[in-house]
Amino acid sequence: MDYVQIKRLSDIALASVLFLVFFPIGVIVAIAIKLESPGPIFVEWSDRVGKDGKVFRLLKFRSMVPNARYLQFHDPKYKQYLKEFKKNSFKIKDDPLRTKIGKFIVKYSIDETPQFINVIKGDMSLIGPRPYYPDELSDQKKKYPRSVPLIAKALSVRPGITGEWQVSGRSDVNFEKRIEMDAHYAQKLNLWYDLKILFKTPFVMLSGRGSGVS
Image (cartoon, rainbow, N blue to C red):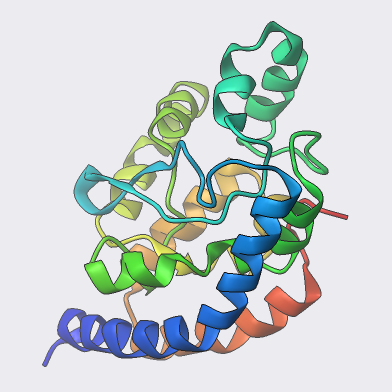
């Protein structure tokens, strides 16, 4: 078997086990989200760009107020917020739209655990480049024209729940550096490198480093 086949089988096996392990935590998180702010359990606006540019729905626990994505882009009250949001690569530290439970689950990456389902379905891999928003990529291509070939390289593989960017600073790393990391990963495609990233991930989750939440 080649790298792609081994990785796909490993993804299905590990994601299935991890889904069962995190399922009880997911139930508690879902209840907490509902109790704090009535609304959907999962993020409403969650289209992301996957392998070969295919758009898919990324599953993620809602960590913000209901309809936050709409407020970010369309509510005049958040005009300055939107400028900062785009300036900081579609991230804001201590986002004012973040709920209390949202701050906790984002800090420790618990909001990402529903993505084990995306992995089993084949939309994602356990390890790979960060899954980007479609409008984020369009915006960043205009801002950083030299990143276009790097973006194309990053999109040649399935995006991952964790990856080089995720274990190397997350929100502390700007777009230019992040897309370099993603393209580097897509070029490398090495099982030993995947294992190295996988073993680093729990320590990064527990530390909360680079989550954008203090």
